[in-house]
Image 1 (cartoon, rainbow, N blue to C red):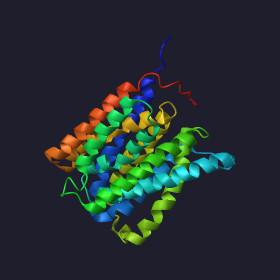
Image 2: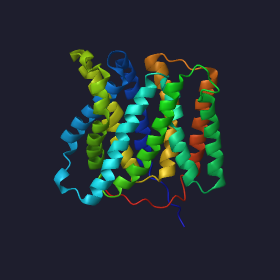
Image 3: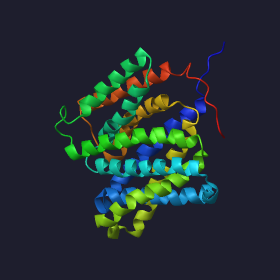
Image 4: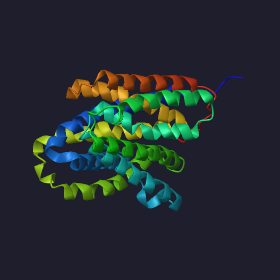
Length: 290
């Protein structure tokens, strides 16, 4: 009997979303000095919502009660995840922020794992994340680290809720409508930050690039991937984020990590690779809804 395998295109879609998000995060950090984390996050979400509305044109009037019940918490979780992560990103390097944020998906893997080998990979990834924590690295800002861990909790919620909403609503519509509710989360913080007046016309292009790289493209790719990839496999794939984040931080932001921090990133990537290879087969057939 031929074993079921996860299609390659959903895997490539998730990996593409990872690269896109990290490039966008590097762009965001360039806007932080003038706009702050809250306004930058709001720009990212708001412009992404506008782009997605124009492209996807979701039928809001045709949504059922069940679909609203799925997409509203998904969107609120999406907004909280973005806002809190940007608060972390404004205080700690990109590679460290991504690695600490991964604690959320990592715990999701622990709770959903059944095979011993999966726990071994999780322990290896946990060891990498432990090297990034404040008690092992005194250079890390405590508030920034805490916000990154909290963002990780919302990331885990995003994975679970995204899986649920993709079962009752087309992925493109889910992302578009969810982004509207995400905007409701971020707007109050942007208005009270006092830095919205610093926005200049020269920031339009970076802001649009941020929206495309950090929200519109990756979240659409992730929703496509979630239709085919089980929750725990999706979570493990996303552990590639620390390596990509560290590389993008080095290339675009000149953020140099210590040897200990690079070792942590390598441990997480090894765990991700091993766990992903171990789960490529016997995962069951995932029925597409497209």
